[in-house]
Image 1 (tube, helix red, strand yellow):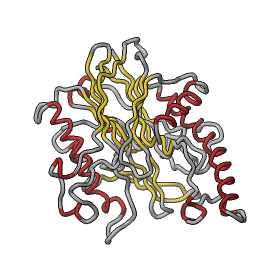
Image 2 (cartoon, one colour):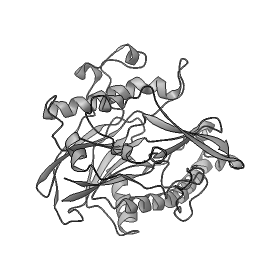
Image 3 (cartoon, rainbow, N blue to C red):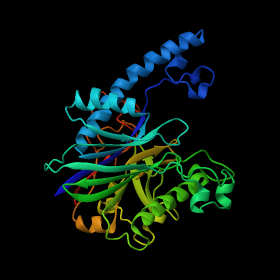
Image 4 (spheres, rainbow, N blue to C red):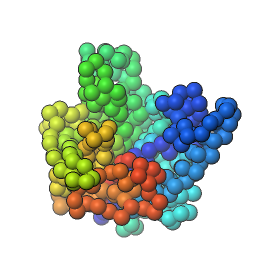
Length: 368
């Protein structure tokens, strides 16, 4: 019996406008900077029109990427709220591509912008097996003190009573055709600006390490420490970290060189250091594991995997011959693909926008 599982950071699936750019040019869209705006009221009208027009193209591409996943269970990151999720599911996934999801699960988490993790499921798998959700649990309220995770590194920016998850760890107990499967859906702390001589990734690393430790604690508390290997579970989401990357050198005129390397440290080492879970993406070639193109100019460009479906050892062993799929047709044209990986983009894709997302969905067919 098989199940199709996918994860996707859909990026800013919002149901509200952001007018802060009128007073803060750093938040002002580049289009509006081309025009003279005489009042805040005029700015708001222009921003509403720009956002609506831009969002329709973006969400059409997001829907196409999700349709290409063809998942029975879809884990999403960056959904504003249930109303936004329902409007997108009905107006785009169902009406546009005829591929909707009747069951939706979202609990408001901790993100300051209000973006949450969510799970959408079909009523049955493609094989006709019923998908039952037995329980949904949020772990957004856990603090560093609760799990004794507070340390000197965290003390530079946090307090013991602060919440660990910057969004949430959403736990779903499922039964697929009578067989158990537990999902943990997360969206770890993003890489912030450089601080105190550290780049954005290193400066925020302690926060992601704590989140990874908390996820592991939740799973081990559920199944028993040292007794998780034979359980059927998966951890899905945007980890905002990587254990390897592919540096991009060169330019369009002279061609590009792609240089893979491994990271010395990563928050994800918490998951892999003793085989707690497996990253099945490692079954793909080293240059073909990326889910995001990162660029801060010609001197800082790389490809990396931020989006994961981690499998428990039992689930990985049962699916030893299966390889995750990466949906890249929604990538903007600015993304630099290694030779042989180019894809036909969705209609109206732009240089950097519109796009499905900067993140590529990851999908995998699993025997359970």
